[in-house]
Length: 249
Image (cartoon, rainbow, N blue to C red):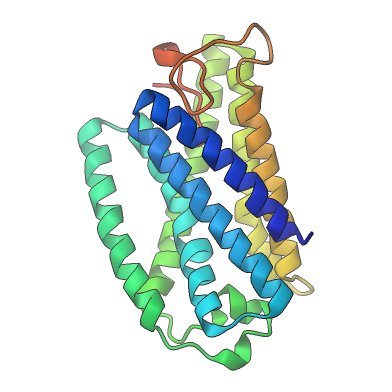
């Protein structure tokens, strides 16, 4: 199994568990996290298929849109829906949905150089023509902003829970979420360095997703009896929200 396929399986399992929490609680943050995880799973599956059979132009378009642009930003949206004032969160949701439509259209029509799809650099965006098109700009902005929100939210929440002695499980969860998000973010850079490859990216994705999922599963299982409630991990309720993208409010 190539690393990207393992990342896809982990993200799919993680996404289904989070989606289950959303169905039970109805909280919008869970829906956003589940969406982000399922997008990530789809992107990793497309990557694995491309590595196994070669990247066609349609496969590249799907990978660029799902993996290069949308996955991280929807995980970050979950953090915004949890931590930001409701009005700000709703505005962010509407803006992101509109931008998603624009970027999806551009992904379908942006010129692609098929000759570059045999290289890691080409698959990681180099095959798409132009640095001023919407999908390129979205890839840069969404990934920087999304990673900052995702990592910042979980790190801040972990620190807050530590200071408030809210529970060792919540601290451990948010530390692991932070580490996992940083691993995933670092995978793209590692894959584009000299000697890097799509397998390098897949390994970082699988490792990062495994660490994040482990953090999720640690809630209620470290430092005390399992608590029930409405969070992404199913613990903490209104007294402390440990999440797949940050916790606490």
